[in-house]
Length: 211
Image (cartoon, rainbow, N blue to C red; front, top):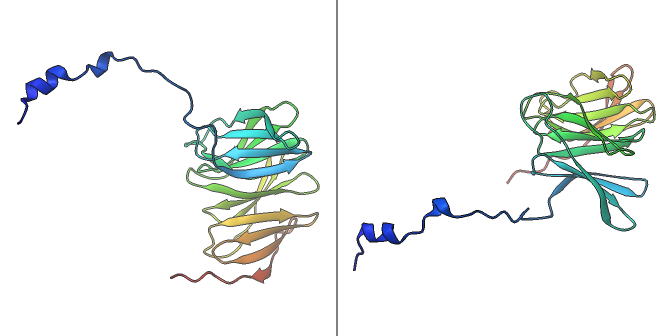
């Protein structure tokens, strides 16, 4: 038997007067995309929560000793996580997405500082490494470029096109004279002279087959 609509309406609870109780976070875990180990601690950056969280983990006790959030930078958009991390001169450096911003986290004080942006909203800092002299080298998308950042002065250098049509620099390493860049689409390993910017191809990988 059908019940008149008026009967349903009169018996339904008044949701507008119900109290709402907040029980805290639904989960105390989260995906990690960027992580670095330094001096007995692991430094990890969360993925998806806004703002992202950087956590310091004591590897002896396996407990989190400090956490901090990454605030929005001045550019449009907000970070959702950090793929790239490295430590240099007492600071953890974090490269974020989907805004390609660079942050520092002071290992002594826990202070977080937004340093600069490396492109527009929708870009990524995929990879990062610190040179022996403290200079940082970053690989980005979707421009597929290698960058140099000098923390002591804030100076920035963008190197030339690594490979035509490449959008992703997914791995970076650096020594005294050379930065090394691993390209995703072209599957190449390149060496870039830190001073002259000259590019040499070191290896060519096999492209995965598409089925």
